[in-house]
Amino acid sequence: MLIQLGTMEKKAFQTIFQGTTRTAACGHNEYRGEKQVRYLIAFAAFTFGAGGQSPVSGTFAGTSPCGAAIRRMLAIPAQPESEVIRWELTLREGRYELRYDYGITAPGFHGIAKISGTGQRQGSFTQTKGTPDNPDAAVLELDGAPAMRRIGTGVLHVLDAGRALLTGDGGFSYSLNRKEEAETPVDMALANSAPDMSYRIAPLETGPDVYAVFEGRSPCHRIARQLEIPVHAGCTKAKWRLTLFQDARYRIEGTLYRRGAGEGTWSRQQGTFRLKSSSGVPAPVLLEGDNNVLFFLDRELRPMTGHLEFSYTLNRRETAGPRASR
Image (cartoon, rainbow, N blue to C red):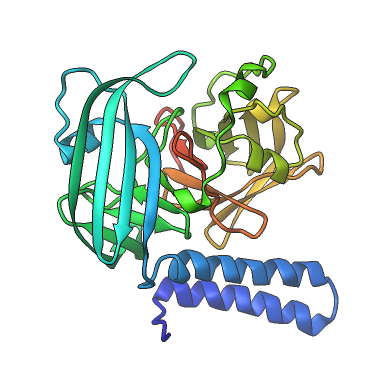
């Protein structure tokens, strides 16, 4: 297959390739060379293999906020009250079928506690590319339904009317996860046996010292294994708050950091945020979808696939201080 590279792709591939060949030529620090190659593979999978014009099929599911923008796009009435949407999107041979429920949540209840209404749409879809922040982003155009951006092979993210990634909140994102790759949800019997998972969290940072604050909830076990953090078998979700400071410090708080916040330094490399822990323990690597949405990457630097209830996505808090370019 012949791939036409855009300006951004050419620059990124050149940067990664040059770093890899320099390492190989020097004959030392093989690990750095291996990491550069993994970046190259991940970048190619994210932009082309998962995104380009390769065929897409399968069933994707997720739970998102029921915000004003998506209400307008799906013609969801203002009443009765609805807080979240449960999505199931099936893609096959250029056709799609979208089913969705919307309703309200309740403490201690996963997903929708009370359904306010349901919807269904179907039609054709085409694969295109380009969003306001990324002219080479892979996009699925659904006739009569919101467009989706492809994030790796296992995730679709809903776009707004202006083709930007919809920003979720601390509870839910607008990511849909491929069922065939989904992380297995925790059995409720195990969940009910889990110990108290509460934790302390610092006041929300604001002001000029803050680069950005991101929050979200993800599945628990796959990311805990990646970070080498032991968790109870009944852990159903991991809550996250990531604070990035202008001086390149970070603080990460949440379910997996109940004994104390993770701290260290952060940098941007080939469209990712790399966290380096001050204590030397593993730290997350996050793909920058745009200024407001981040996606967790696995050890092979592939976007991680969640399940119906939670996605491996973080959303920027609007209350954070103004972002400066770095």
